[in-house]
Image 1 (cartoon, helix red, strand yellow):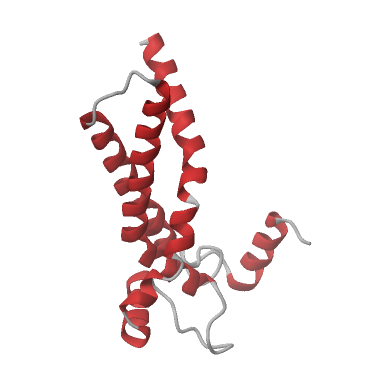
Image 2 (cartoon, helix red, strand yellow):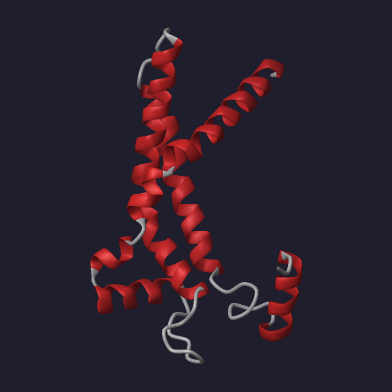
Length: 153
């Protein structure tokens, strides 16, 4: 199987660097990550500062895990239309040789118009199910780095 570098070079050679080449789906990807991180971390750190810290390490772990799970669920609900648009833009088009999905917002509008509101939320349940195991290491490392930085401040 060709490496990522080989694949990227092939895409650049055939389609270029633009929004129909290597950067195809860039706006949807930026929207997806930007919206998710804005909602997720904004909610997580605000709620974490409101809810009292628990002295029992097991309960404190559950508090942080629960806040992370709720944060991730809310962020996923808000950002999954961007994820659907990204997948439609970057994936195979419905009719070979014809590009139906080009831009992020137009793709969301097309999916909504042709398939209905719930089509913008395809894949939401599996995404939420992987939040707990997937985001725990992120919080562990963030907490470690913040503690490390504050130790030397």
